[in-house]
Image 1 (spheres, rainbow, N blue to C red):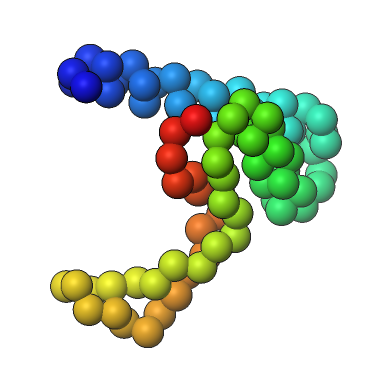
Image 2 (cartoon, one colour):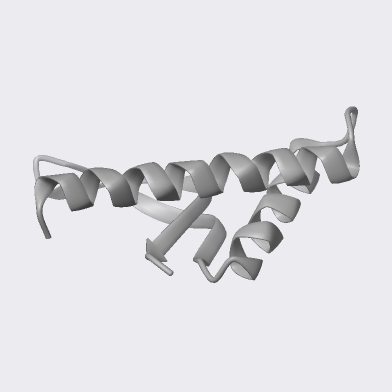
Length: 81
C-alpha cells in the first residue's frame, strides 16, 4: 500500500468514526451518560462493517515489561472493515 493509499484509508476511517459519533449523538440527543453515546457509536460502526471492541482492559507495559496496571479503552477496533 502506498503512502497516499494509507493516508486516504485513514481519512476514510476517521470520517466514518466522526459520522457515526454524530449519528449516535443525534439519536440520543444531549444529556445522557457517555456510555450511552458509546453504545450508539459501537452500533453505528458495526452497521458499517467495522469490528469494534468496547470497554476492554489492556495491560500497561514499561520498557517491554508488564507493570501490573491495566486500563480500559472506550472504543477500539481490531481491523478494518
